[in-house]
Each structure stands twice: as structure tokens, then as C-alpha cells.
Image (cartoon, rainbow, N blue to C red):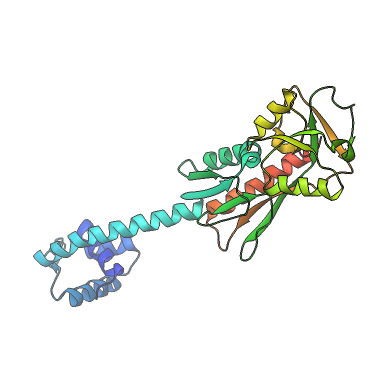
Length: 296
């Protein structure tokens, strides 16, 4: 059976016209190149070159032309595969990223911009889903507000303070005691993930607000608060960064609720592009944290 090295030898000799020039092109000695051709001829059962001798160029035989045509196809596919692997190792290709509102709005704009600048041909696909449980599935990276389980690898990105979002004048400036929220009108996210934990912590302290409206949209929560429907307990970054929402006031809570933690979840060996997504998200999260984006 002939091998790729045999086909490369055939292609080089056909292109260069002599064994000597083809050997220089491939970095072989002439004797090594002759061995490659001999191996090919044994594999295909006949001569692939007529060798007139002297300085005259070699000529392909009919069998050689047939094999060369197939060699072009095979070597073309091999070169395409090699180029694809090189692009993959350099950070090109496709990456599927699961995300949610805060990460989409705060962390990913910078991450995607940096990746696109470094790798213009990369294909970054974002899937936003406010799920109750982390499910990597076929995703390369999943940003979520709780750690992974089982075989999932977990990278903590940041810790995000919970604050009270209130209509102007509803509370004095500064921290608000948690017990002031008992029975208070509250606008809230659906009771899953972080919101479920917030309400559980409040209930554990005997604080049960009156939820008057729920929406899965962070901006809609602040709009309802601005309209005077009630207050809300939200992670700081869910309110936007670097700009904060207008027409509402933000108050630390005392005692403070546990922060919302945001993680990057992955599984096993990552592609170079997926590794860069995680690394750049870690760097961006650190920059936001250092700039005070996770606190009032």
C-alpha cells in the first residue's frame, strides 16, 4: 500500500521535472526519493515515470498520470486538514457558549471583542438560557450562578453583592436592615437559581416580602421599581456596568446576604478557543471586581 510520502514524492517530481530538484524541494537525498518512487511503483504495480536518462526531464507514464490525479485529491484533503488543525491550535474555529443576562451584558462584550480582534475568523455562538440547573450538554463553556457537579470543571469568576433597589425616597440613604423588607411590596425575578436562594435567606430570617410582580428581565425589574410597584433585591452587576440604572436608589443590606457567585463551567479538554473564552472572562471579571463593579 502506498503512503502519503510516496504521493508527495510523485507530486514533487512531476512538478519539478527531475529527481534532483524534487529532492531539494522535499529535503531528501536523491537516493531516498528514488526509494519513495520505487515503493509507490511496487504498490500500484507498474512504473509511474519514464526515465529517459541524462539531463532530460522524466515523464509520467499513463499509470503515473492516473495516480498523480488521485494524489492531487488526496494531498489536497491532507493539506486542508493540516491547515484546519493549525487554525484550531491558533484559536480559530467555533465555540458554543451558554450564558445569562449579567454575563452577556457585563463580561462577554469585552471577551467577544478581544477574541474577534485576535481571531477574525472565529465563530462564537452564544446561547442564553435562564435555567434552574447547569446543563453543559454540547456547550464548550457555560456561565452559571452556581458551581457545576460531577465531571464538570468549575472556575469562580466573581462574587456579586446583593443590594436593595428602591424608588427614590422610599428609604433613607445608606444601608437598609433586612427586617424592613418584611411585608414590603417586592418586584422579583422568577424563583429559580439566585433569586430562589435570596428568598430562602430572607425567609430563614423571618423576612417575607409581598411579591407583586415577577419578570425574567433584569431591566424590567428596575423599570417596575422606578414606576413605584415596589422594591427589589438584585445582584449589583445585574443592574448594569459601568452605568447604573437611573430613577432608582441602591442600598446595601444589613446584615448582608451571601453574594451571588458567577462561574465558568467546562468539561475535560478544551479547544484553544474555549480556553481563551475562559481566560479572558476571568481577566474581565477581575477588572470589573477591581473597579468596584460588584459593590454599591
